Length: 365
Image (cartoon, rainbow, N blue to C red; front, side, top):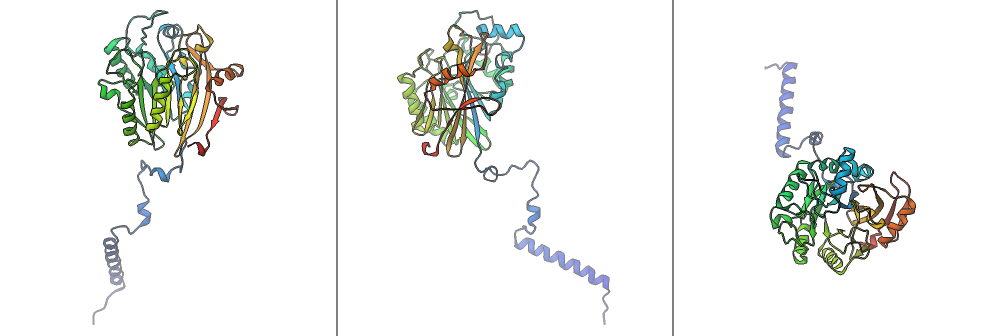
């Protein structure tokens, strides 16, 4: 008779348990322990649906930003490349995405005198643009080629070094018409920029409706929302012209959720069209046109996106001081400026920045 000790029973029990565990592991594909399957890497990013069910993404947009001529002189006077943006930067930085129209190439060169119509900004101005939180700038405008191809290529270089994206221009016509895809809170936005142009250069995306419609449709396949920007309109006129309206309507019809306009140098109307929204002109933001009250005035727009589309818009009127620096408008000034938007707005005083709010019902989507 063979006698088995208690220790042998213990060893046999362990071996049997290990064998059973291996069989179960093979049978169930190795997913024996649900605890181990939840031990995820620290940098693991859960899918969007496991995050906030319906995130609110904020886009802030401003109008014309010109960092040359008298604005450039003021920057040098105060010794601070952030100077033009000091009074508004906190609002601009608060958004998920911040956009503007850069009206001057960034390139080394001579001083630009008062009254000149060729603009040039010092390379160091990117310090101020970064400080204010700009993520995307359109360069599709009538001044970006004021210093030729070299000025444009310098602008590419300095913006890339500052990690600021740009649209509407490129080293080739294909590049100029290519959408920029930006992601915020797991939601993708496609930006496209266009300009009326008298230069005929293929380096700037022209306002060709057929090409724009095709680009919007292709961008829509890559992004949740498409934003089209246009540099167009009649300067110093409060009513958008026929060409602005036609181009903007075509962009919405092609699938854009939002069209943002600039160039008139004054605030123009906002239009709801087929479920999309068109801001025809935000006016000047940083400019030295102090010769009229209207050209001193501009608008900062904050647009809220959710999965169903644009759900809210807020407007912050600004007034330019000292030929260079926008400040938030006083109540008495604001009412006059927002009246040009031709919208029913609710004045909000809560929060850090008083604003005029347009709440969009789901029925409008």
